[in-house]
Length: 238
Image (cartoon, rainbow, N blue to C red):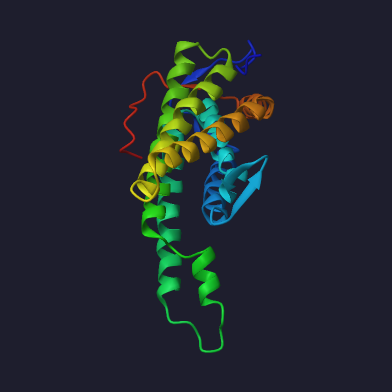
């Protein structure tokens, strides 16, 4: 299966024209929303099939799927802006939650402890989460764009799975090291990281048919198929 444009349409080089961004804002908002939702839901742990996972595991892998779709259709340069939007949004959310947590509760409001347990900001956890997102998403998008050039746009599944295998490894490693190093044994750290990593990669593989469908539809309705041949791949620009 390939998700390239039909022969009657031609692939273009970055950047995509404004006329080909009809659904770019929708995909971008979905990407950022999924990431922020995963941050809030991560405070709960659940067990399934004997595996203990954070609530974010339900939705966070979708951010990589949306990242794949954005990079595949609109290119690395536009996706880079979206990744920075997610990063900035996460920082603002963490600051707001921390400020609200620090404000003295009203005398008749008995839920301060519950707020701190669910939405309370633990600096090390927040730093680990945001740093992992930044490093993982940029790794994922970079590999996705480079593999598209190497495969000349063929075999989308090799890019979605390949980029996720590396991107999620970076994400899981950075998060576990920043959030838990020194607090848990190395054996426990490895077990947690490996469990999260395998779950996320399996999630991506299972979603491959859906990714194909969305990518093909977007390329058809947008009329674009961006190849990052002239793109500056530094993450430090908008």
